Length: 237
Image 1: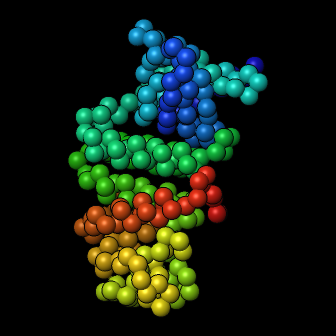
Image 2: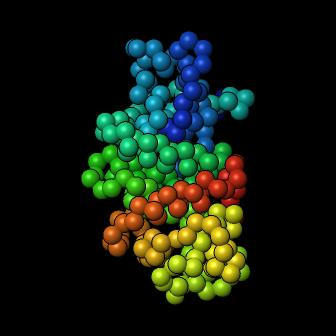
Image 3: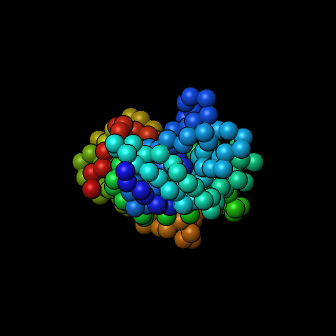
């Protein structure tokens, strides 16, 4: 039997039996961990706080025959204000799901863990627009995975489109993973000049860097690109 102590964020949970749950945990040092939490749904369970998404803390796990069981949990953050705002809760849940698509068992990813933690904190405790926070989060996530959409060259032919503003001739192509010139994609959804300007400003920006006024279409476009990748998510670093 192996014992493991690690910081985790709870990404998902599912009930089974009368009082138990299966938890999907994200550890910066160990990637994805699936762990059984025995009796955690009982009203008097001492680890009850660990049974909900967003719960962040120090987990003690026992591993036997390749199966992990939660033996202890010390909660450090629950991001409880998210539960009082349905829109921000939905956005935060999407962030958990996005990480769940990427992380792999026994694959450390401390940068993504820190990005998720920072994003949840700003969603829960700041007044910043939730869709802008998620747009920045998703852009940074895709950059880190090497799958950020092409926004300066045509995603199909490679032609330089960095100076094409206004962007009336440019089209969004999720199949090609970026924006295409009019010659390659004469039909389809157009990208607004304001959206393209924000995306280009955000291309190398951090979560808290100053950027031009946010364009809501940027969040919808980045989400469309990310959701378009095959499941399970394939790294292309």
